[in-house]
Amino acid sequence: MKRERVVSMSVEQPLWRALTAYRVLTMIYAVLLFASAHREFHRPWLAIGYLTLLAVWTLATVHKVASAQSCTRRFLGMDLAVALTGILLTPLVDAHERIAAGGPTLPSIWTAGSVLAFAIKGGWRWAGFASTFVAVANIVQRGEPTRDTLHNVLLVWVASIAIGYVVEVARASEATLARALEIEAATRERERLARDIHDGVLQVLAMVQRRGSEIGGEAAELGRMAGEQEVALRTLVSSGLVPASRISRDAARGALVTAVEEPEEEGAQDLRALLARYAGPKVSFAEPGTPVVLPGPAARELAAAVGAALDNVRRHAGEGASAWILLEDWPDEVIVTVRDDGPGIPAGRLAQAEGEGRLGVAQSIRGRLRDLGGTADLISVPGQGTEVELKVPKGDER
Image (cartoon, rainbow, N blue to C red):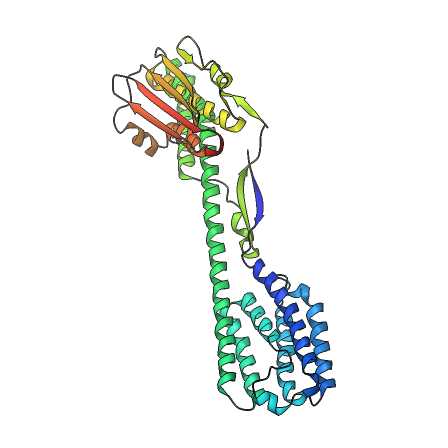
């Protein structure tokens, strides 16, 4: 049974957490930087007022930089305004000699956190917009564009744009991954439905068509209709018309939905018991003397693949054909061999059947083994029967 589960996989979230920590730490650094040189300020009371505002603002808006949803445009504008205000206040509170010597601004490196918020939220264009305002404010604060000022401005500008570009690439990768998972989940669901339909509905329709043709009369008409429905259903299955998945709906919010198997039964099962039911007058079953244990879902799928192989023997080799099932338990894998004494499969017949929508071998046998991490090899010699070898790895190798 399949169900869908939402798995949070946002590559942006670690960046928001890092930005939150950066803002708090750089706020503390700006306060300590002022405290170590407060005697050199002309108007220390004005610096104290601004740094108090900066500390309150930083701590009060921690939740705003926790995710892209909470970091709104209005907040970004106000945050940038706080940073620019601190830069432009620096000449009013600090000594000109310190500013000329390359002293830090009041918010110091806290300003970079405001620019990085733009980069993470909106990409490299938003980062370029915010860093340009910071660059202009720094040049105005210095009075003239010195080499150190231009160096610092260029560093912030390039770094923020680079981070914004990386964020955009990460978002595109998330969307691509979400689409790939959607295709994979839809394909697996289609294959599962094709196996179930082949094992049940299609075989019943084929039997009704065959028996109706044999009986004749009104039953022949019923058989003809059943044949038409069989062809239509095969076409529907092979074309992949399955319900659309909801996988990519939450991709923009950093969530991916994957189709997962819901556990049916806990514990392991003895494969011998599942295969023994196929034994009969025309089917011989050879098994080991000890239990062949596999996880429940794997054992049932392997047994179903054996049943599909025997169905092919009855349908294509005739009711009088004999079949043999050999179960082998190796240390690293389980091997089940199904052999018959029928006429064999003509060369190219399997590819032709798959093209016609007859997916017995492709889905009911090989598809099941592929989902289990195993293989299904089919060997057929015209006039000498057919042999199907099913291999399933055990333990961690699965």
